[in-house]
Image 1: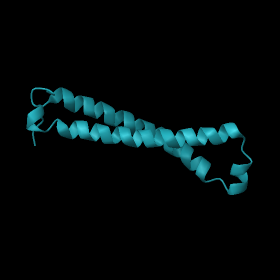
Image 2 (image 1 turned 45 degrees about the horizontal axis):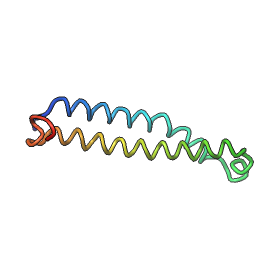
Image 3 (image 1 turned 135 degrees about the vertical axis):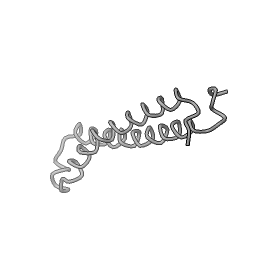
Length: 86
């Protein structure tokens, strides 16, 4: 397997790294909130609950970014992208 478009490959790797960093930093926070029992979670103020929802949304976006990065990286191996995207 040979890389046909090196710049597209590096862009894909950078996008993958960004997605993995988002997931690495958000996952422990999600585990913290989800390991709480129902009584503890219900006693949290609204701001903390909204923070939990935002972290879950960021995690989902991180998964999407990883998907996009893997598509870009794998497309750099295709022959039709040898001279750039047209």
